[in-house]
Length: 343
Image (cartoon, rainbow, N blue to C red; front, side, top):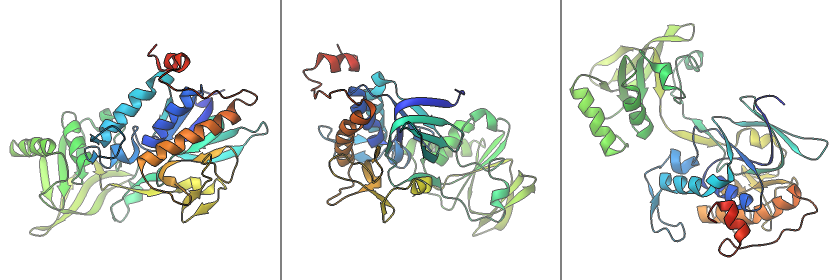
């Protein structure tokens, strides 16, 4: 088996709150999980789109942020040692002769599992790209939609476009290593954490960082390498910022992506499931959370947790055929408490 080939009981597509809680429910039953997510960390929409936005409808938790919920779920499943494959998209799914599934990602990772669980929210997150001529010529070489290694930007002239948390956070994180950071945003206001905005403005005042109120207008360079980013302002018209790298942070959109090619029954771009096991039209493939649909469906994190619990019971039958599933409570089962590392 190659270094990027794995075998597991369950592969979960999506590492948002519902996917993370599914690890807990499956782990209680002794099932091992690998998770695939196109983002660079766990948490899905909660961590990526509103990490500081309050959530009020998690049972017994009057209020928590998206990031706090993610952190607590990760702590809860730590004992089950899930394996994460971040910044990867589930690309191809095939059925093996022994009845198991062989899943391949866009990065070449191969995972063989008995059960597949789709917990991908509304689908895969895809970055919103600026409408610039010739953009694709620079993508992956000097235009990036995520920062994977800070060292890649050392001594580079970096233009960061956007006004949210991602734009401000990476401007501040890359400032110590980059040759020069320029933030481009269409207005003077930001949708980022106030402390980050204040820090950025202080660096601009000191002359250690640049801020342009402008719109992206074009790219200059050749052979995939940027030499400048054209911007347009209301007062001064068009000018060029010398740049080696452009990081556009305009948010994310969700698409079903390759999952649509898995041969599942779909309804309005959602996956239809039963309400007993939340199994799809294909046996041993389940869908939980916002990506599924059934009569009475509510798109709540709470509903996704419930779906994950029932799915896990059915997944056990596929992964451990012939074994009897004994229902137990974490409050009274010494076996479950040992699995959780609390006894």
